[in-house]
Image (cartoon, rainbow, N blue to C red; front, side, top):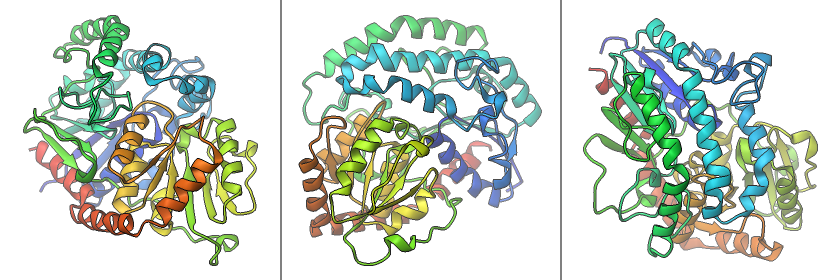
Length: 432
């Protein structure tokens, strides 16, 4: 195959960007030129991995909006860290009440970024002259879909965002087997988002792009991938269509190796990884609450402390750092306590690890519910769990030999499907 130029545009947050890094690394190793049109705060973080950076501002430098501080040496994804820290109180509400007060404001920020960056992104596409464009985001950018290059969409979040009549509504955290509340949630989502969608769709078409699907903020590409293992995927009576391809996992191989710190070595209980993600860990109060609870157990913990690590004190049975090579750590541990982000959820299944899920926002509720209803872990009330509930969940999951065997078999199947290679193959095929 001739060398291609492949342009990736991931969402600013760590999850989608890391997903694209993993796939892009495979394509780079195959001899292709991989260009990242990531948000500007990723400057200097992608070139060392062998990629070309042609970055984009999603807001006026110095503004308070999405990535507005990128020009001031802002950390990657800093806007979302600040946004989560300032809106964490919303996560205590039922998911249907978050639609108007948290989900809609997130869409508004994402849409503002798409509008602001349009001309700059158009220039980036022209400069790169890509053979194929790959976007991992939940909002569309007309500059990516109106070029001559084939467009590939990646969904690296819970597949309920690909709506259907027989699956729960996205962001609800509702069970798949019970339809109670589905219609009410869908009606409220429509009421809250219809005007915003209508305005965005009109602007989208004004840039020469095709109309967006009804109440969707991004359309499908010629080729479409979603990242979710078969063991956890949803049964659908209405299939997604031939352009859609499930990728069981997309576990990047660019993380540094990890050696267990001496203070955690030995046989002192199970080894557990605790992470609320780069965004969820910005809720320092919640981090402290969980740490206090885990300090009373006989287990050892590796803690991803996140951007506000200086405000967090770990217990004696813990070791942690601001950033950790997660995909190098998960294979070493017995269990993962997670916020339910899609990357972490699929990585746990890829490596066969049970989960305790403390969902905070967006599709994390859906991942938490899916893990619980399939018996792959335990979902707890993130802000309302009692210490005894957490301790009991750890004891049950760590002592469940049948679950351990089931997860090990699933991991072997997931790894055997070689998700990174499959994604790279589909992207190469889309370019021809």
